[in-house]
Image 1 (spheres, rainbow, N blue to C red):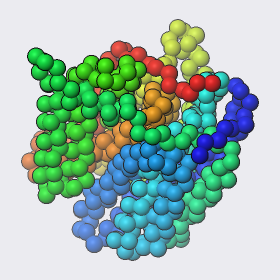
Image 2: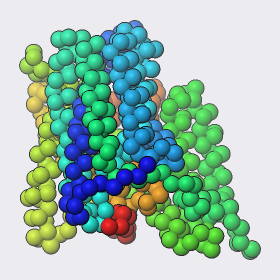
Image 3: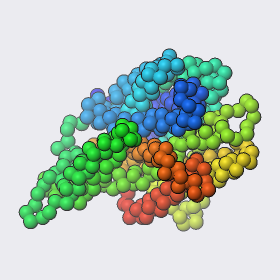
Length: 517
């Protein structure tokens, strides 16, 4: 089905209000359950484990859940682009999402039922994740695309509006009313979000899913890899074959590292090898496919390099709901306060920083002759996340030394990390949409979300490493605790990524893939 919105040319589409309202409620539901997940696991669901193992186990469950949430966008994007369209996919996946919340509330003392609920939420939240932002973009064309940045910022602002109240209130509900109520309230908000989205159905611009494209991205890559030219070697094909072999061999790591880590490693190797191989032979697709399709496929691969270089940022960012909460538990705070509530600082600062950046910082930079382009902002954002982790690592060193430290000290790293988030995540949403060819909007947005899956893979690998006795012994020689060492390691990881990102971004040429007016 395809409908046309009734908004005037060059004006803000009226149906955006339904999508923004849906997103506010959905984000409250997601962050409401996510931000109490680690404390709930430690204090209730993982009590069967020895006390010393609960923190690492809780981090593993949390980051595995996040990996699922950001992996399933691949499925949601594919289903949307090929079969049902964005609206129908979002609506049905939202119902799966609601069922997952119900499981969390009902099975608070049943590990199998609770983990099944986490799986359903990962499927539902992940399935809709690439589509809602992309659906926002579909409501614009060339006549009003100048308003899209403002709406994407508003979109990100409402995400954090919901997250702020969820982060502030849900730890209190968990403490005073128990898990059934604390997980049930986000479920109710998710149901409201679904209803709000459904109410706008008659006003949306609905871009229908297209038939299989003879010149789609995957077909261009296949042609580039398989086309043989007389007298020329096929390095790209051999690289892709090697990637497939290594990806399959990665599953041998399952006994040592678990299925999730092994599967993620296989996925990263597969994407890198097939994409890199196609890049080496991309010109072989010319003649079989039109130049615009080949150029579009090459541009998508260039975008994926940008995405790959942001993965260290997400490995740092998502640990504020695990590692930073656990650090907060070791700090002094008022009796009525819970360390998980510190996460409310993040969305509060986002709501302040987005208008500050747009109204004050960016105009000031332009006045001094420096244009804050999307890629420049993202480079700085990754670097600020590294600085945040240097600070939080310093706090951990003080804690390990036995000196009492107030949780108020976490305000500084939260501020630095949030500034980085605004520069990376809010910018990345609009950047990912604008760089995606029309036939690849959903899938490219899925790859943008996959950066968080890979970021959380780095966290799981780091957690697995510190279970190794030889690694622990090497860390001991540094004079740092395992936790402090990991914090400084992630800080260095992000700063190196920022350097690589900035160097690559200098050679990247941005394109414009908004719909024609």
